[in-house]
Image (cartoon, rainbow, N blue to C red; front, side, top):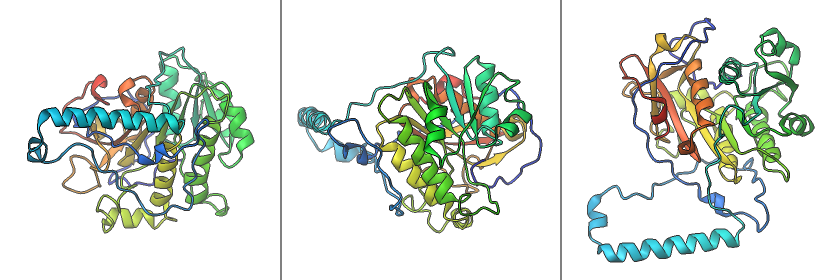
Length: 348
């Protein structure tokens, strides 16, 4: 299973090599206002299956310094204090707790459930987690396939998991401290189940529902989607890449709905939107470039367009351990000309 972003250059090589990284800039991720619309009890999962229109998440930071300069500094301070107090009061009234980073404390803080573990990206996530000594539950519909791929030999616990079967999700997620979801629909003859609305949207919603249920021990949820997920709201509705990819059953729209549901769930989340997925090693594709939400669109003018699956897996794994990754949406690509970015700057 993988994102359906098409890499300009992809080979069948399955190398899982050590990651090299690169420079980037990371834009501030903007809060989803839907997270305030919660009940007075533990936040329940909001289904966005009926939502098809993308949402725009404007930044709270003034783009023009003159706008801010026109207001006396003491008034700005009072407004900020009052606004913070109002938001805090409203959040408490609605039962929404302030966002607290819930990164894992270290390799022993597991197990981590990897959903879509037999996919080209998921199996790399499993391998890199195990290389760090993290306990892993490799979730897939076909445990025999998972075993044949060497996931059990790598030390992962194989569990049967179908994202459309909540009972299997509950059993697989029991006791897990984090989830990395690397699923994506794969065309098959069983299109009633293997389609974007079912796998990328409903299936992800089911995972979030179990992760937020009473008694859940999940602290952080990492979701892999794709560039151009929010293309329409970002002014990229006529982007040829978006139109081509979304023609596959509206896959980008379904991924967006899943993103919105996760962001409104109350979970500590990290959303990773990769560019064109390549099976080549990072050395062949280039160093990592991390950018902010709705900044990268697969254009020739972008700093990069594709990325090694090994690099995507490394970003997902690192997202579990960095406090700065909390409540973030990052878009990741690579370029041979990009300088190396230290790991501790990936979510800075």
